Length: 174
Image (tube, rainbow, N blue to C red; front, side, top):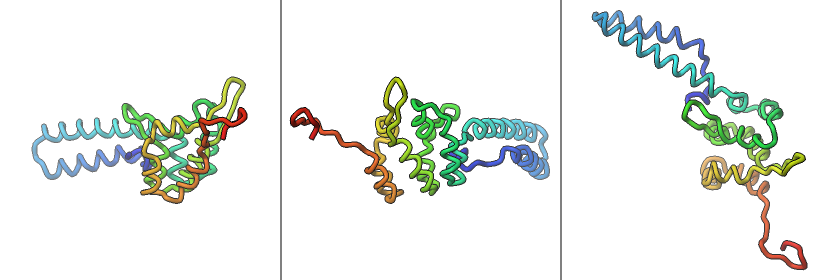
């Protein structure tokens, strides 16, 4: 979740130094200083690595609430993995959903664009791609989530879904 805020990684070393200096001034034991500095440096390195791994162009577009940046970010994605780019970012062993992050952070323009992109039918020479199955798999509670957190996006979701009857009449679906 921290990655989504896009914190600057160059502020980690000065923060660690400042915290260690405060510790040096208030605690007389050198062993405690070394242990504190070592552990804080380790935590800072882990955070920087997490930020760097999780700062994808899609997440940056969400943070800036820029549909244009989002379209540029996913414009080069292959059709078969485009939906995955919009539904899953892996940081270490954690998985973040850019769609959920956009909704939770209030980036409604980008969340709308993400839903529209997922629910667009695309094709290449081999097959058709329609991200609704991946959407339901990743967010089985998407209707409830939109109803509670982003009711304006419900129309986008429902407009993008395709209803298909199992009944036929004169060899046509009804």
